[in-house]
Figure 1 (cartoon, rainbow, N blue to C red):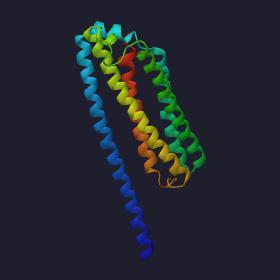
Figure 2 (figure 1 turned 90 degrees about the vertical axis):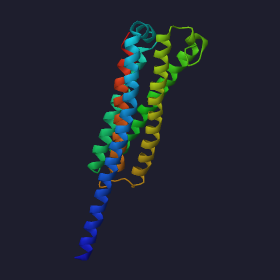
Figure 3 (figure 1 turned 120 degrees about the vertical axis):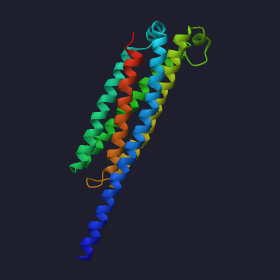
Figure 4 (figure 1 turned 180 degrees about the horizontal axis):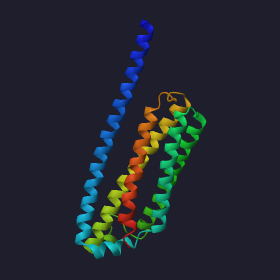
Length: 209
């Protein structure tokens, strides 16, 4: 009887820790939304003040790459969700496969972003460049916000890659299993936030042409 009670207490303790971890993750995600929400507000104010210049500057961006990256991130959101669902059903192999695909998509996103930024740099459009500073104020503001907001998002993608890679290793080593998947679930929530932020960034910068 005592053993049964002790087992139940341990189970209850683990369950409560999982809830606490999830609450902590939601709180963290809320602060991230506040951060990007503030940047979106700044963007809205400057776009209202320099509508025409924002349109002209946006024409310098590659809509094709932006669209491809949107598809990549949306697909990665699906694969991370499938990874969680597979592990919940005890299918470790499928979970590992889906999480690995998520990481492949994340790297694809960063590679595309590298080539996109490289193209801008080769045209002399980067923070502090003579080429950029010779443009009207509205276009300088557009590219300033573009680099800050997509750069900050890119940093979040890199952090996501580190987190998901760590989780992948833990699943392989059976440290995360079908009855102990809170860490995978929380990392999935973080990745969904990364995707959600991009869904807002994409039309703001690429679709105002």
